[in-house]
Image (cartoon, rainbow over all chains, first blue to last red; front, top):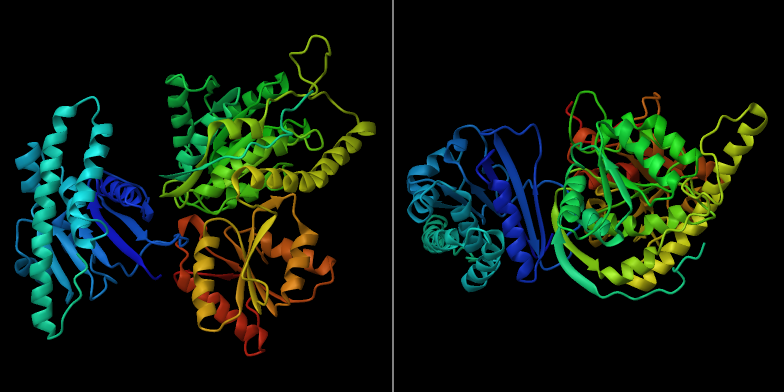
Length: 212
Length: 406
């Protein structure tokens, strides 16, 4: 499909990967895109590997299958790298964003030979700093928005602010922390994307298109 | 007796994004049916849950009856509808199977109940994902069945269900089907309609005869001796025959209100198609995307997406296939019949062609059982095989499975 960005999320039941995918669809819709956000359902248990998907497009989306050749992969839990082939089908010119305190260089050996851009965001650290608890999906949502470049930083933050104001109408005290988590993760991911694009460009000897 | 449905109020489109279950629940809020008995079952659970929230928030005054099983849900729906109340319910899979006896009672007592079915496979093995075996299992229960490709169609079809069911020429229950999880749980764009035009479109429910009418007592569901039973069944079938015309009339009024057109089926790029695919539900969208790609490569392919499965638009399907002038048709079933030779559409479409003397090669494929993913590549493979068969390079496979682990 032309003009369509396809994203695959990997997480564990209870970490909010599905919610993040639905929120990304939500915020992309608000900026005027055609969207799809859906999880792959099965016998869900807390901690079991789960997958969720996004299609974001300028045109009406009609395909109703899972995504096998994503442009981007988001990994909400780095322990999945040992058990799930997260880069399976991931486009060479795409990117993978992993929640880990490690650097891209350190984590690449676990990616089964993936040659594209690798970005790391320490979502746990960001979440614990800004929210006092580990909600990795909030920072990873911002990282996905930054890397896919489907909307500007300002658009993303404005829409998320409105969304949180609605969602947390009864506990507005948590909005500030959530916004801080988004901003921190967005900026980190944007920086990582620049770095990864430069690295891949060096390695392959040709310029990679940076979509962010 | 009077129905305030004569005048169509045009509606503005409200762009939104929501899942199929949210879309149907939103339509329930707009219709505000009198009674909703329901028992939750995946993947339709969100519908009674969301409707309950609308009721709890005071947005609608539907009487929600939390029953202890789907058998009771349909029994309560029958009682409520017979009493004269506009009644709906929602279910999936084993829930529909447990309603089976009552489905037949609802239809034969000519009660215009609306059931929103979120398609899920029937056991076993036990599985929560989509196929059409629940809906197809109920295909001969006397219900009108309409299948939806996406959240938009699930919403639009639900709104049209009441004027179809309650039309005095029809008086039959209607099942609005959408694919479990694929449609019910995927958030996608949708164009909603305004409340007032929807309310005007659906109109007041004024049944001709009902139990809570002391001035005109009636019996519902009495024993009928053989001397009368067959006539009752024939009258029920005659209503199903008349339903086709009413479905098209309602679709036309819906187009006037919303700008969106519906028929018995949708013909997608069929005009000069050499190869056709007949398919229902969410997979039709995937198939359309594949058709666009194949057309760009010069393959003349098209889709006939069946929307109305009951009544079965036999003549119209045969005519559409004839009109396309195609060489071969792939008939796609998301359901097994366990008859040793074909799925449900795999039996009915060739029968329609034969009875209308349209002689064209058909190949029946089974796909997507119990949530097995169906992709653009699968559609491309089917068309490639169809081309081989039509050119005589390959014998037509009978009843072939797509995406099976060999």
